[in-house]
Image 1 (spheres, one colour):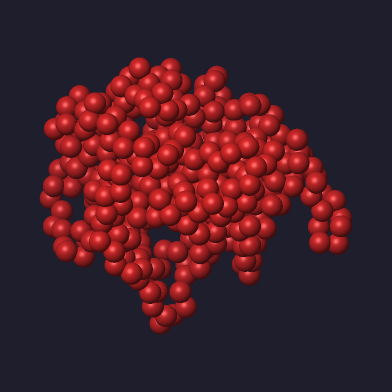
Image 2 (cartoon, helix red, strand yellow):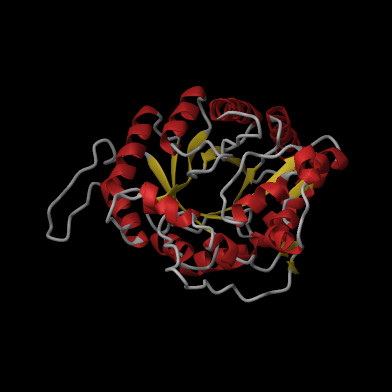
Length: 373
């Protein structure tokens, strides 16, 4: 089981008092050390107008990481397809593949398609569910979404990333168009051909990422693409997402059988106590995201300890805090083994954020030594 491939999802985190310049350079350094440690792939996540995340120009950063490494696969986890056209995605990743053939992953996500609620319209909360432990895996209830929906950040993000008057193309249509551009088979509705250059024939591996048993998981299965299930973002929906994907799966040119990656938040240190100390600010960072403000600069331990938590605050982050895998290498490896067994994951994708970059590098090195031997 410990030979299951281990990969990294990176957000290029910016700590409080740090800079985006340092953050992106830290990502390149971490990728180099990850390659030396035996990690299978290194993905960058697309986020926007978040003071604590510097991976917004995702394709650019992927190119820098790929240039600084030689073997590890590099890609997006995921491109927020609502903010891009199918042609621009095919061209960008076709260009990356021209420089780094056989190493580029194109992860696609639905973000950017969500619309803010009209004024006065309240978003219904998901039904409350008690946390469950299924095959040893904690599956918490869904978190309340109303606070984030009311914040106004979603509307601002849409206004800044979409041209005036434009609306995103249907997600499934966008995915189909990207695959057609890569294959060189794209035709418009009136049968006019178009070719992505670079892009057509590019050695790119498409993925779909999802956090529930909805459209993304089903589409990934129907298209026969590999699927990444986001336990670290929405742990309540991970098993439903995987089940929906496997149920919908059809063999394709990409895969003859389903392939699932499961993500998890991880912090590793030499001892359980030290890891818990490093992970202590995580809840405050998640709170900024869940309350609709976006990922803030990652707080220090002192700042996190000084925060006065309310019951509403804790309700927003409990699922993420309780499912973060924290501890010594042996402790976290045992927890990852539970994730692997409960989900049937073919590969595990870890994401780690700490206040100090050196601690983040060490966390990855320690788990690689334990898990990969």
